[in-house]
Length: 338
Image 1 (cartoon, one colour):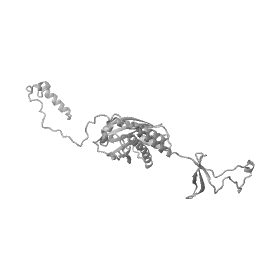
Image 2: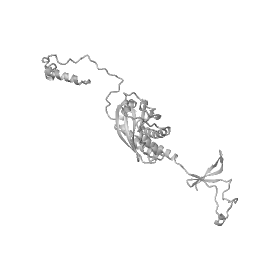
Image 3: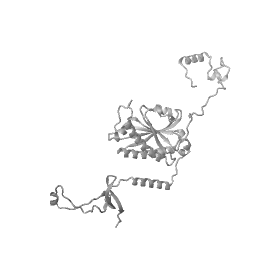
Image 4: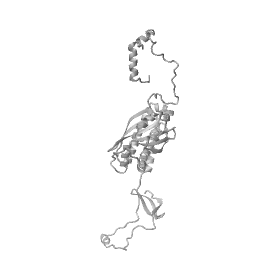
């Protein structure tokens, strides 16, 4: 029974049992000792209604591949966040829960930094939640502070500058999340918007089941949590892939992946280019007697080709000139190795 009896009803029931008006389990088994025929019969015609659209169901089994995905995400996001902050950041997965979306929203304080993400190749949206104190610590760290969290968070709203910094962190997480999911499914994750009020992020109805994964983030002087919330209906089409105990990956795929990553990193490498406009040698006596208007002849013809050095190595020849009002050198030919 789901009905809770009041104290007066409990007293009346105990009195009825004492007087014999209500049969106990022993007396009612015979069916003839109960003066009033026992407690009323169960109505066999009673029908329990069931809403087929409700997600009140038992989700059986684990999703081991989801744990693998989040392990990859943690490793990648730890490196990305540490590089962006220029300090060590530690990230650990604390829990993964199946619960109703309304129950999760009710646990969030106001304000909370919540970013709505869209999965292009999967139906529905997801939620990336950054705890307020962690968000303020990240902003402080990006601007060169000691990443100490803001002490008075209640009632304080995020400024546009703070939200832009948080969006930068979310962008790093999106890239790492896409890479972590790549071996299972290409999700095509993209940023939609940021909200601070939990009531404005209705990605699914409150009764729908979601998978909420919480991560602990530790900086040098601050700690906080981030959460990734994915509706169960979003991953249901690929549930079989996530339920698999292991995932076979091709060595060729890994080789191509690492090759493209290394190539991309090399193409983003900064190179120093210097052009020597000429040089000469003079005696110290002549240097001490230099005055305004004196001319120092160089060993380089102004109209001739200059040496273009890349990282201190002579690589090209070029002419001095002006390009769109800026001093420039036009590369004419590469230098042949002798």
